[in-house]
Image 1 (tube, rainbow, N blue to C red):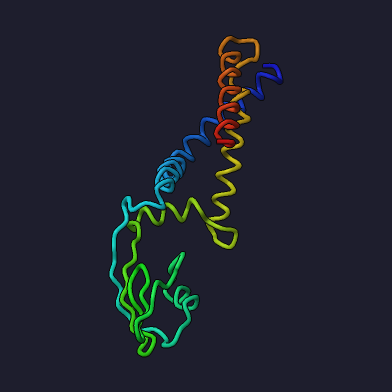
Image 2: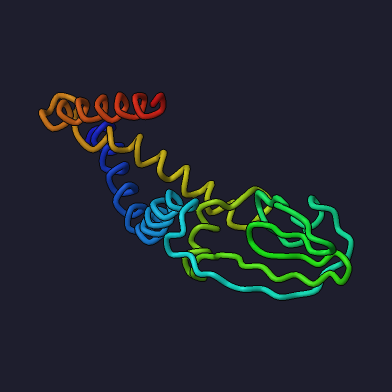
Amino acid sequence: MTKKKKSSNLMRIIHRYLGFFLSGIMAVYAISGVLLIFRETPFLKQEKNIVKTIAPNLSGEDLGKELHLRKFKAEREEGDVVFFKEGTYNKKTGATDYTTTSLPFIVEKMNHLHKAKTGEPLFFLNVFFGLSLLFFVISTFWMFTPKTTIFKKGMYFTVGGIVLTIIMLFL
C-alpha cells in the first residue's frame, strides 16, 4: 500500500469513528443552536412568579442586580413602591413580587453546554468538539482522490458553502 493510500485510509477511519463518537454531542449542539435562535422570544419559556424579601432601599441598578434581571429598568415610583416591567418592589420593606421566564430544565442545560465559558469544566468539551469539527472539515478532503468526479463536484459544493457563508455574514 502506498503512503498516500495509508494516510487516506487512516483519515477515513478516524473520520468515521470520531463521527460516531461525537454523534450525540452533535445532536445536542444542533438542537440547542436552533433553540438559541429563539432566545429573545417566549418560545418554550415557562413563567414563574417569585415573591421574596430582599434588602430595603436599593437603587434601581442594585435592584436589577439583586433580582438577576437583565435589561432591568424601573418604570415609575408611587410612594415606597417601585414598578418595573416584571413586577414591584417596596423600598421600605424590601418585599418584591415579580415574574420571570425560564426554559425547561433540559433545554437550559443544553444551552449551557452550547455557551460554556473558559472557567467551566464544559469549556474543555467545547474546545475538543470545535477541534473535532475542524478535523472533519480537513479530513473530508482525504476521502476521495482529487482526480475523481466526486472530489471535483465536492469542491463546487465547498466553494458554494464558503460563498453562502460570506454572503450571510454581510447581510
